Image 1 (cartoon, rainbow, N blue to C red):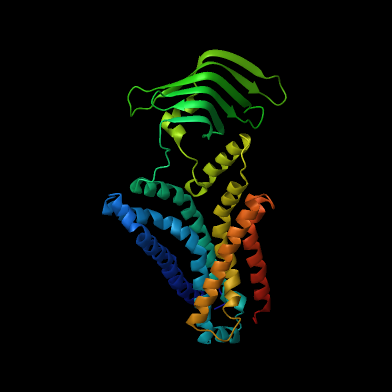
Image 2: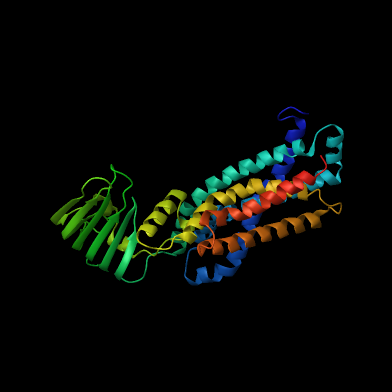
Amino acid sequence: MRGIAGPLDRYVFVEWTKIFISTALGLPLLLVIIDLTDHLQSYLDRQIPRADIALSYVYWMPQSMFLAMPAAVLFATVFSIGTFTRHSEVTAAKASGISFYRLIAPILFGAMLAAGLDLVIGEMVPVTDARRNSLLGESKISAGTQRSNFAYAGEYGRVYKALNLDVTQGSLDRLQIERKGNGADYPTVLISSSAAKYSAPAPTAKGHWVMQQGEMHVVRDSTPGLNVSFTQMRDKRMDDLRPVDLMAKPRDPQEMRFAELTRFIRALERSGGDANLLRVERALKIAIPITCLVIALFGAPLATSTQRGGTAYGIGVSLATTVTFLMMIQLTKAIGGKNLIAPDVAAWLPNAVFAVMGLVLLYRVRT
């Protein structure tokens, strides 16, 4: 029994996994039913096909699972260990010389797997959410065809600023492009032009931008910079942007992958924006999956800390812990967003608090 992956380990892991899978799928399905009940009539009023509505909720499942995964780990941990305790299986294991720490090792291993799975799901969420928004017609494109005095954070660290945009004409007035460098081989580049024109061979084909009457400044750290005046100029990186793309509203952090959010934060900071809340959201993309392991450390000793036991107790403990943790995330997110504490610290603070509490509870458990 004391070997790695012995019969007892397999038994504990299987029992924990049964509850985990049921909860990890059950909680998102419950959220789907609640959301569908609230919004079905509005979807039907907008004449969205029923097949698209059903498929949109399939694409919504990853987002629901991402947030529900730590709660599923907690429910599985509390209910499995609670069952072992009520059936005297924990006592029997201790009598056989197996400590409580060794007994819960398969559960901690399962929590690690859940954390890894949640990281993968978190990277899927922006893709599935975009598909869901497309099915439901919830476009992020602003109404209208004109935009004034705006900044747009693009790919490759570029920030585009313009006085006016006319989508129908495919034109920009007073365009500025900023790209911050990070060394001698990748210097900072500043481009300013009086206007830019977009042309495409066909409405659906990819076109290109041509900037007119401007200057390009290459700023190096240790060597003299370079200034170039031009009558016409193309930036191939900008060709990926259509005029209608520049009308897009800023995306939510949940709609960007970790790397995309990192680039967006850097671009926003270079353009003078406040990125503290986005930095918290970026850290949460890792902190929430790691919560699966932290919550298992907390839930395992908690399940044996009372003699009352029972299903009602397990549900009560799990729900109270989940609600408390979610409230702490919202509180620390607000504090980090206001820069009262470092954004990364704000994201990881709930995990740190529950980890300390879990270690204290583990220390007090009779092994």
